[in-house]
Image (cartoon, rainbow, N blue to C red):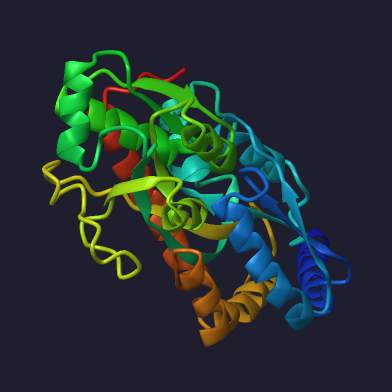
Length: 320
């Protein structure tokens, strides 16, 4: 009986201490770990949210870019951080949906090793080419590739770019040389310079170059047209029937982060993400923003693992 009482007292003390800790949280800066480089879409989202979350929660938000292995490096780093709410991963489909099927040695579990905080929204990708190429549509691209085998290359700065490029190549039965990058901005620079032919890139980084005429946009990857580029056809409309690739973003913490801290972060972040000011900033960079409960994000991550596994298999991509 005495041992039982001691166990109960210890458990109650631990819960009480955790509650006090969560009540005081945060007492120092919080770090957003970005899976891609400076200027990437995820980096932009981090900085938009950091500017608002810092004043709202009373501590600075530090953005740390940690690119590598299509975002897996950042996920592994956050997985090994203390579960205290001070290190959050800007999670995207790359580290938490696609990497487990694209890379053989991903040393983390997207479900077990992270605690969901909130969804942030969805990216839309557009297929862009160097404007000096005689390609003005997806039909033109396929015809050119077949007439010039081995001449076209596609860049990727994340897993969405890899899967989309290989899906197009398989569907059209064309040879596209894959040129991987750690992040989208340097990949776009090489397309603009003519060193690479094309890329499936997110609106956030590609849109300014398209508007400036440095890149030519051919189509968007989602099944419905984008309100930002309503005249741009979808890949489905362009002939690649059923092509529908949705890239996502959310915030997760290391597994074991106290529920009260997760709840406090979620309660603070959701009004920020859904506010007219931040929604306008998201729209200006081609991102569709919306928040969620932690449970909703957790369920979504599980469903996305299934979808990305299927897409990787359909594109016949072999894990490296």
